[in-house]
Image (cartoon, rainbow, N blue to C red):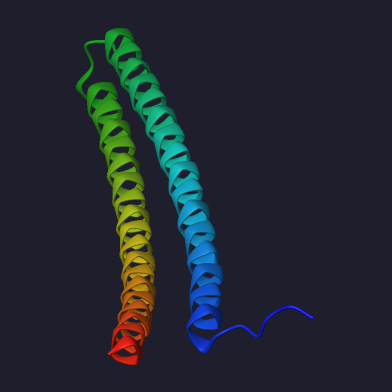
Length: 134
C-alpha cells in the first residue's frame, strides 16, 4: 500500500496539472496568433498586388486616352471608383485587424487572470507549508 499523500502534495500535483494545461493553452494561443499573422501577411501581399495591378491598369487606361475631354473625364471617373473600392477594402481590413487585436488582447487578459489565479494558489500552498512547519 503506497503511503498516504499529503494535501499539500495533492495541491501541488493539481497545480502542476493546471499549469500544464495553461502552458498548452498558451502554446495553442501562440500558434493561433502565428496563423493569424500569416493570414494577415497573405492578405497584405494580395492587397498590395491588387493595388499594384489596379495602378497599372489605370495607367494603361490613361495612356490609351484620346485627346477628347469626354473620354478623359470618363477615365477619371473609373479611377475614382477604383480608389473608392481600395479605400473600402482598406477600411474593411482595418476593422478586421482591430477585431483580431481586440480578441488577442482578451485572450491575453484571460491567460493573465489564469496565471494570477495559479500564482495565488501556489502562494497559498506555500503559506500553508510554511505555517504547517511552524
